[in-house]
Image (tube, rainbow, N blue to C red):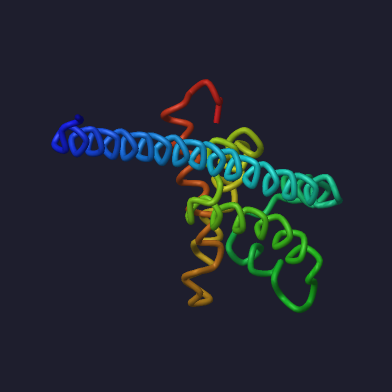
Length: 170
């Protein structure tokens, strides 16, 4: 005859083994989900980068070339770009800096890795060094402290990234 206490002990051992298997399965499932989430995030970041790249190649690159050829040295000349008299230069400038503002916002919110931006537009650091002082003066004169502030954030992050990763030549 089988002892009742032995059967009880065996049922406890079986239950404990079942709990261990369930816990192992749960941990394994969580790891698979984390891997899938990481892959989804990387894919989404790539989609964002490609979307911005499409905008560059879709005509905005011409604006970039124009912007870099301008010789604007004073705040008065800079403010003239945004006057109603001749909005052409202002529109060209805004079309470029709006992309930088968007990228700065995405980096600031952690939606895109600064490394991806550095690979794509590390040259923006040089652009900000040209236009940033005028943008900062414009903010004060026009009492608009948020004007291109995310673009400035992007510049600061790119500069920091460049110092930490000299192989990027930023």
